[in-house]
Image (cartoon, rainbow, N blue to C red; front, side, top):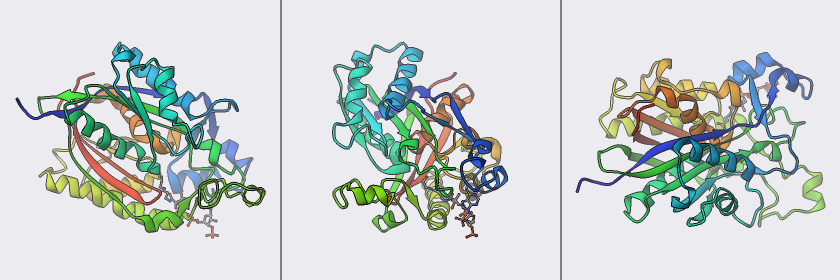
Length: 331
Ligand code: UT7
């Protein structure tokens, strides 16, 4: 039998309706549409306004979209992975709740946490379960309600992130389609630059941590930018090199949507023109775990069987890397 690979066979997505535009942000913090657009490429982001809904709501909606499109019986799903930096609760995995709510009653489930690399690392994990031969249907969801951890008085962070979710189904393939190679890295020295300081075991929640706003995202943007620009481009270049791919062989770059300047630098390093670069940062901002599957959902109609996709991401921690995947189906 030919080698077993893990192919993406379906995609789903969900974005909340509310559009937080740059113009609205201008009325909230000291910023301008011009600054945000030129520094990040973002024009608007979606926000889940409902106070009683958490990340699971977004994840369930994305999974239901996939299930409907694929006409899938959720009872066939064997594993549900949810990549999220904003779980519903610190304890009681969001993935477990999501699996139950979508009717995946024969699945086991758990969360992954590697910040903006959640989905990339999740692809690696999902692929290993499939390649083992033991599991045939793995649902990977990337979902974040970033608005729940943002300080809307901090112009350096609140303009960047948005809420959303995307889902993909991994299934076995014997035709050489699916995940081909991966280059994944991490560096714990990076955690000072992008973090939520309080609420974990190191600094449990207290009146003081709340007063000091330590439950919101803190980012030293400039430092993160430097590492992200270098490492996202480097990871993508490395995976091309070791698979003998030239820019002509690459059909699409699927880059984490943190900053248009980082994406452009990665594409430049790969020698790709903009027509091969998936981009939706202007519409959704940085949705953390959801950026990669939301790109797949937006570009699904343009993807063809056999297309060579290079995924690249960089996130807090630091975490980063690149994945080479051959697309497995036509629109
Ligand atoms: O997804 C996970 C990984 N995260 C990333 O990859 C994000 C990486 N970092 C970035 O994308 C960029 O660093 C930012 C978009 C966050 C910031 O852009 P920057 O070009 O690095 O700006 P900066 O932080 O160097 O700030 C430049 C100036 C500062 O003013 P001074 O000190 O020069 O007077 C900031 O105070 O811009 C000011 N500034 C703003 N001005 C208007 C910062 N935020 C804003 C704002 N509106 N929203």
